[in-house]
Amino acid sequence: MRKRIIIHVGLAKTGSSAIQAFLSGNVGALAAQGISYPFPETVSPLGLAACSGNLIHVIQRRAAIDRFLGSRDDRIGTYLESTVEEAISISGTKTVLLSGEFIGSWITAERMRALEALSARHDVLIVAFVRDVYDWYMSAWKQNVKANGETRDFRARVEADLRLGGSAMHRLRMFLDGSLECRLLNYDRHRRNLVEVFLQAIGADPAAPDLQAGPDRLDNPSLSYSQARQVVMTARHTRSSRLAALLIDRFRSEADARPDPVYEDVDGLLLGAHGELISRINGFLPKEHAVRDTPRGGAATEDDGFSTHDMATFMQTVRTLIEGIEDRPPGAGPRRTELPADFDPDEYLLRNPDVAAANADPSEHYLIHGRYEGRSYRAG
Image 1 (cartoon, rainbow, N blue to C red):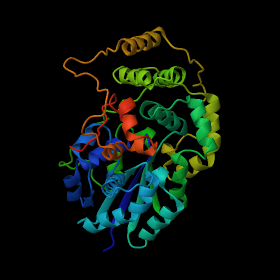
Image 2 (spheres, rainbow, N blue to C red):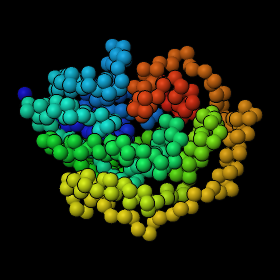
Image 3 (cartoon, one colour):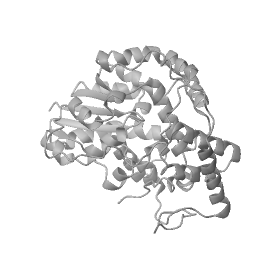
């Protein structure tokens, strides 16, 4: 039977986790609308912003069960086609919905051919959110500082990415240039109602009474540019991952209202490198939703100075490290200095796909970053 296969390409920093949490929490309600969302994620990662989507989630789990020793890229190559085929075979609905965080960075010419071959038997639709290229890079850099120990400043990270061929945004070109039907949505225009817009894009009714509203934002607060820069400088000049992690932990509860700066030279560099791709993207968007393709004039700033409050926060964090004390919420237990007895490295990578994408050692990442970020490391 010919089915409709929808693949949500969850590009980084486009609200994928919030969408995936909603989908996993509404499997029954979606099925009532004729949409199957197989292999939903469990409650634990949903509450910790550790979603990866049903597609990547089950691929990672199967690789762990099989003790597959290949890289994350090898896992995708080995399990992608069989996972998609099983999802189709077990679905009892006309439409099958698959979502994969970071699948945009893992697509290759060979995997595109496999998806295009699938379209000979089923109607395949690719759905992805896109956003302003400068904000995309800025947000991704801050996430890497928070979660993956990035020690390069923003400008250096951009320059390095462009030397290597660009970010996952460039991988999006493979979908746009292929024969599959693609539907793009502008994250910047819809960030306040991502789930509603996504449901409309896949032909679902967002007003259906049995749909349970998900959180507007999962527990994954972003650092501000200033906070991220402080973490980078701390890690680079002190070589103390412990101090950097403590600083991140403090920033999680200290919202910073300062806007991120816009550097005209970096903005121009990104627009120049992505100009043709931005034009392709805009060809899939309504004119009023087009991604910016001209310099963001009048917004530039070169103020990289730190405030008195910034310095006070830093020195308090240094004191915490030196004296071995931490300001903990009432009733909270002490920080762990070793891995929990039930720590499962494979499960940790499964529930934290950004760590897997960074090729980080799961045990080391948890000790340095994950425990301070409240990351999930086991099922349940």
